[in-house]
Image 1 (cartoon, one colour):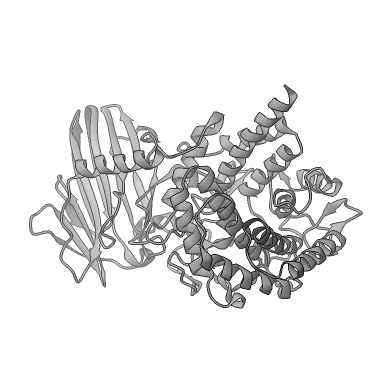
Image 2 (cartoon, one colour; image 1 turned 45 degrees about the vertical axis):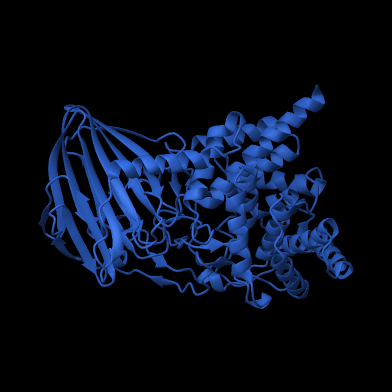
Length: 599
């Protein structure tokens, strides 16, 4: 039986990340990059598809875990009838891109604890069995498949049998036993051994230095800061691109087919990510993300994609791993993402807003960015009336989504504001005319008078939680009667035990099976609307309810199944964590302003 998604934590090094289960098993790792083939794929298959477990052999074990201070170093504590042992998992900062490393240090706390290690390596997403040989110095093993090599070193004796490597050992109080797993190229020499204690000290120092720059504050300080650390872990350091999650195909409904590969960079995340990083005090990371964004979108505006690879790759061909059964038998397991070829008009607004926020936030200007922006916004002025697949990347055909038109308005609006505030050149009068046309049409065709709400599609009657963004992006003020009506309708009809669904899958023609969890970012958007309307107590109550469903180390997936009371969707989800940080900062500021004005 597979573990719940919330039973996992991650460790990473800015180039990849491993999923660590509460039971001491690493069930997902792609090396050497986030989007590389997985060498441990039990998360979406079985143990035969690769895992690495170190755990006590005792039947009764009490487990607790935490990240050490403000780091991504995970410490798991296992209490058994015979004693207590801890496992410290981390990935050192990787100065040498070719040789990433995953370190596990087992330490005896009390008593004498019998332990077992099981190591099943399967490259090619759990498919390829490696050729395993012992190292010349007898400190471990070397496993090779094609161009890939992994070296496992440890201070305990290893046994190889039945296509797996095992070890049984006893840990006494104050004992420290290290395990190092290091990636390399099969056609190059074995990467050298490094001292695990030195690596732990250096990794701790690096994380503490990074965390010291955080501007997290107030009663949500811990939640904000853990989310910022998570976003840092999802950033590919060589380019600045931030992946949506480290996993693929964790289902949005258990047993369903809403399974997607999220190990890529969505332009849609740009607005929240840039603002989140800057508000958190991380301007260097925000600048790297802005630079990645400009590089990725450079070129003909008609060729703009909604997502790219972590270095800006454009070909993200989607295919299925038919040898993997999927998380909790929820096939297919998809690699790549066909949504890269969709038209999603809202991304133009998100890109323009992101670059406007960067300048307004004080990032050094990039002359190339404005040149790209002018071309993009002129393109939006030509195509904004076209139907598209929309923010939710539907696969049921293009439609006239109201939110897509709203974000086209945002694209024009941010271009106009940029020209006016930063004295850039551009056809501002033409842009103003198009902006007015979009606004008028959205208010006429996107608002359903009978329902007293903006609706998902022009001239339709279905609700869509993306419309909660209308006040947040400034399309209409939060106290506008139409916005209030929309928020009330969404609260009433898209509610799932107090959380918000994106839309009703039973009535939406999205080309997929019916059913999914509540979308966590949408619930944060509802918090924002409550706060903007002065409903501060309601906003904070819902925000606290959202914080309560994070896992024990502060991580969110994409969605939450309110019936099963468990997380669903890819994990950890950048969109959920950026929404948390942005909402937390806004709640703190608005509550402070409300208190000042009342006093």
